[in-house]
Length: 91
Image (tube, rainbow, N blue to C red; front, side, top):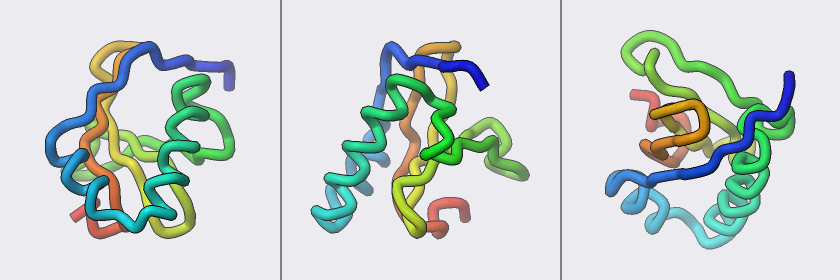
C-alpha cells in the first residue's frame, strides 16, 4: 500500500483523558507510533485496520500487543484520535 501521510491530528478530550491514565511506558510507545502514523497511516508496523459493527466509521492501529488507538478520518490527511487503550475501548 502506498504511503498515506497525515497532516493534522486532533485528539478528543476522551483520548486525552485515556492517554493521561496510561502507564508512562505505553505513553512513550504511543508517541513513537504516532510519529510513524503521521508519516504513513498504513505503515505495516501499525497494523492499521477498519473497524466493524457499531464502530464501523472508525479505524484502529496498534501501539503494542495490548493497546490500540482508535481514530477517524475527517479528510484524507486529517485525523481525529477518538480513544486509546486496551481492547476494552471497542466496547
